[in-house]
Image (cartoon, rainbow, N blue to C red; front, side, top):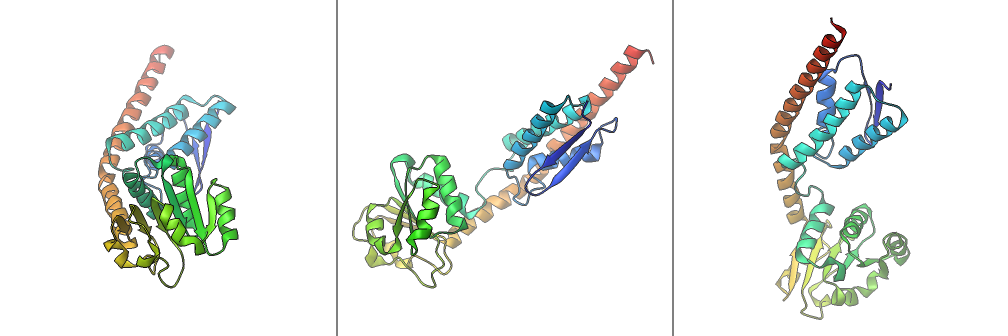
Length: 273
């Protein structure tokens, strides 16, 4: 039987070993990891999938000891419980997540909406990833260097255009996300030639979109300060959920210890000890 399980994530490598009894401190740590309490991004969900993957791989290689099997089954259960019963993973906490959530609210039919993204960088790539996962298919990526835009757009089946085409871009877009490193604004009031509804997200510092765009008919603008404020509110809500998560963890540790005592007593009865 396998007595050791290695958990590898992008941030950690941990070894869990069956020493004959379940170590309470080790179990508590694993449950905190599963709950996202030990992650740099509080409450993040990817870690739970990584724990499940490590558990499944260990079971596929050889049969785990009963203690290791129970420990990791409980860790996965804890991960599900805290995300169902608390707010530890609710609400977007990154700029890209907040932007996409607001965009989805503004464009309920994302599959038939045109979303334009201006700028090629890690932030816009993250937004492209989220949008693709949500089913967006009409994405335009604009950049001063069209070659850079083409390189990123190819991975997402998006259309690459030069930033010189921004007026045409604004005319056909339902939503526009701006995140360039330009030293000055690149979208101005006069760039809009129609009154159709457009939701704009300005994630740049200094700003990409002139403030007076807000006064145009059909134009809604979210700036970096608003996005940051929403992310901060969600982070605060997650922090307030930590205590409830810890209470769930202690409940599951107590249940784990009861299981271990019952198993030990059952063995004693069987062996007549």
